[in-house]
Length: 252
Ligand code: DGL
Image (cartoon, rainbow, N blue to C red):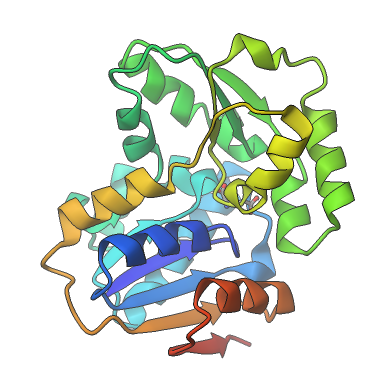
């Protein structure tokens, strides 16, 4: 069973791609809504939350883990592999697949992400390894506004304020390096006009298939666990899986 986790709804964008690539995999999704947003937390806090999310998924039978949260990427250190009995091919995260997608590309990239992701410099360093300098833009409050159902006007205002002083024309692609952001791609477009947005979820889904097929082929069952109930989260799940057929559990 593949365990996927995020602070809340963002990882559903990754779940959608994993389903697309491996419909027969059993998936256990953990949304840590009680501790959302992750993107404003310290590295120490994120380390603890990452370890407990992975432990929870493993305790409920996950044999592979997908971190559908960019903000915790810096916490996925090699030491975690030993501590949680993970092997490199049983943990898939966001940074590697995203950076690999631009290996051959001359595109000038602007990375839009949470303060935790930008502050960790994990993407900047990974892109440097393939000889690329990228622009960065931390957007405080955006993931939280999306998670907790702010109005479209409020979300547009947050995006607009964040881009003040950014010359969008200096970039060919804006990488949405927070899994919550593709949920409001439409609003990015409304504020910024027709600039190509890149959603890493597809590359992560492909990586999942490459590493976990056929090992994780099963019955296509989906189970959601959240650390706090949220109608916004439930609504997004219904939109994603209108045919139903999944189970839902709220931890107390
Ligand atoms: N969706 C997560 C990410 O990709 C976390 C966002 C948040 O909770 O701040 O960074």
